Each structure stands twice: as structure tokens, then as C-alpha cells.
Image (tube, rainbow, N blue to C red):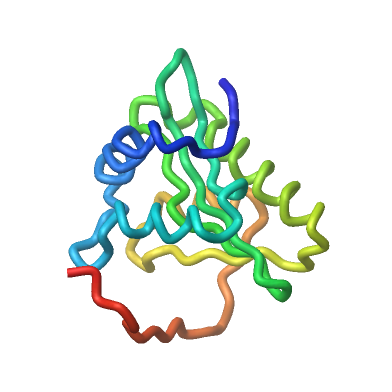
Length: 139
């Protein structure tokens, strides 16, 4: 298993992975999300390669106040092998290197399996509501 930065030739494999993991939503175009990430901190867009195949991903960002993780995904056939944990450890390491004091992420409230995964890694739910407003439609 190798964690490395995303390469353009990974795009198709990453989008397939996100679809398999149920991360793609109609209002988010994954190609556009990838293109946007590549304009800002592209070295913080990670993939996991195992046997010459992309089996994991994580988009990480830091704007100077908080670190964020998006699109953490592990191929369903590889889940339970420590890949997600390794990605989160690497995300934490990269953010600490940048002086980031806190990491945050968003999980859909009905995704109990993923909430349990993060709880085992020491992540806690906060007493906050996520608010959002679409500025540029993807459709």
C-alpha cells in the first residue's frame, strides 16, 4: 500500500471509487471538484495505491484556521484493512506540519458505519449545524 498525491491519470479511478462509496451527489460534479482541488494545495489530495490500483482517496485542505477532510473513500473490497486509518493519520500529519490546530470533517448523519469509524479514531461530534449556499452550480 502506498499513499501519494493525486495524479491526473487517477481521475477515472477516483471518480469510480467515489461512486462505489456513495460519495457522489447530483449537485456535485466530481470532475469539477477534482479540478477545483487541483488549483489549491494539490499536494493535499491523496490517493492510496495497492497493487497498481487506486483503492483510497482523501481531499485535505487548510486555510490557516482549521483543517478539513473531504472525499475520504476506501474501496469496499478493501475496507477493514487499515487504509482509511492510514489516510487519516497522513491527513493529520500533513496538517500538523502546516501548524493546523484542529481537523474537521463532514459526515452525513445517517451514515452510522462511517460515524463509528471516526469515533474509533478519536473524532467527536460537535454541537453545530452545517450551513451552506451554492455559489456556482455544477449542473
